[in-house]
Length: 274
Image 1 (cartoon, one colour):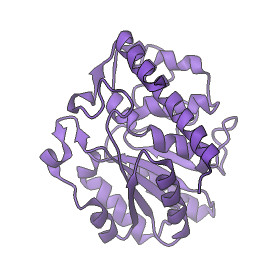
Image 2 (spheres, rainbow, N blue to C red):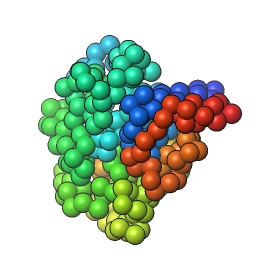
Image 3 (cartoon, rainbow, N blue to C red):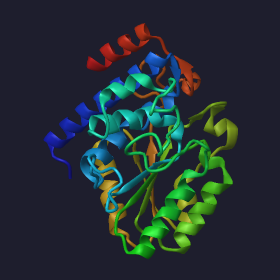
Image 4 (spheres, one colour):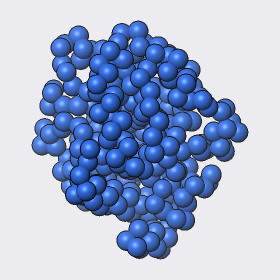
């Protein structure tokens, strides 16, 4: 169980990630703000209290791996990596500009700490399972984490990966569904409903849990339980709010990719500061 101090530190770290994510997008003037902000809390938890990483050696073979399948949420991951010391915070003001090392979608060849180039939705979980299978063959005991979107969970490749991971008993795969219930064209339920999502993953042979994706304690306990089941891959469904923490776009269908000016960003940051 996380201590009161750990929870306080996580809340502070998540607030910093949110502010930096908003600033990145406002500096560019447009970006995928909704789906970036909904995963801030799981990123803060993974990089502070869960993952085994070395910011000074991003390609260390013993590291835990994170694959952000919903690669358009890269700005939140960039803010996290910068705060953890993978690269200078000055890079954050270059998001998706000419010559940047921080493209709008994650690119492992450009950004230290990015383990897989992603953004072609539906593919990230397959890559995560492939990496996990290779590590298993090598006897590498690291964990492979993947964050997938609920919109991309409508794609068949997600479920092909689900079958593969269960077949080969990839117990060191721990995936998260960012279930913010919105996608570019509307609500998940309007486009292709996913419920009962937990029952679906259980039927595919995964150890499955569903928690509040903005509650650090619930997420941490779920990860610990996932690690105990070494015979099955794990899916942790995170109930989240798209645009969480930016009141001008929180929960709005229009926040998938939207224009954000600096005045709006500064108001949102002031609101975060309370």
